[in-house]
Amino acid sequence: MNFLAAVHTDRGIRKERNQDSILLETAVTDHGQVLLSVICDGMGGLAKGEVASAVLVRAFSNWFHKEFPCLLYSGIKADAVRQSWTDLLLEQDRKICEYGRKRNITLGTTAAALLLIENVYYIINIGDSRVYYLKEGIKQMTADQTFVQREMDLGRMTFEEAKIHPKKNMLLQCVGAGGVIIPDFYAGRYEPDSVFMICSDGFRHVIQPQEFWDRLQPELMETEEKMKETAVYFTELNKSRREEDNISVVLIRAY
Image 1 (cartoon, rainbow, N blue to C red):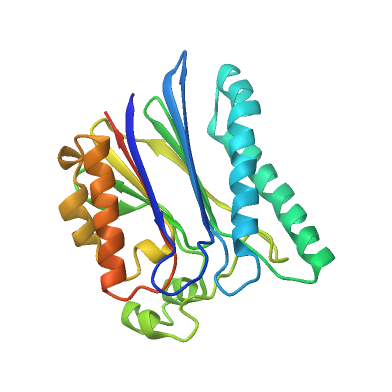
Image 2: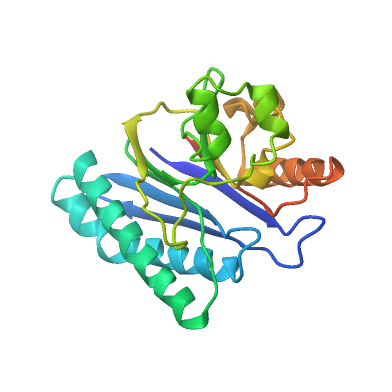
């Protein structure tokens, strides 16, 4: 499998800093082209969220260059990827917590990571950044680790109530803020001529899934230039609809 990809990020209309960090790595191997992409959203109201997101993205980059080759050539399996990524997240959680304690500040970050090898995907998620898959339609691959998502899952809140709830942005888990983290992990097969979208929550708050599908269908993502143009379009649409958060997205077409 080969890939086309585009990355775009914007600090948005209100925040002084962009606390999102993005990673996109590719390599040519005996298994064909492989790709790793990560979006980390530094926690909005917390001090130095951009530090937390950058630290975690750097850790994933180091993993791709140092640990991933060993996993790949020993016969990569989902359980091995899950354990390796979980160890990475727990280690960085400890480091970021210690950084905050020494400076008497609180900081944290979400993490959504996607690894593509041949026709298999691996995803790990902490927080409310998301991974979507577009083939015959658009499918959300990750579940938000948020207060309102938990309440909806338990039948105690409707989707419409969740959109206006005062705790709609409250995370149940993030890396570095000092709580227990239990990552969600997903693995499965994907098809050629499909698109993955990884985004921070600011990219999708005010845009409906059908709007994404209308412009991100695989047959429309012919070139990286077109993909970049579409990423910019949605970013500016977010801003025109008064989205106040940082806005980040990675688009990947597999072919």
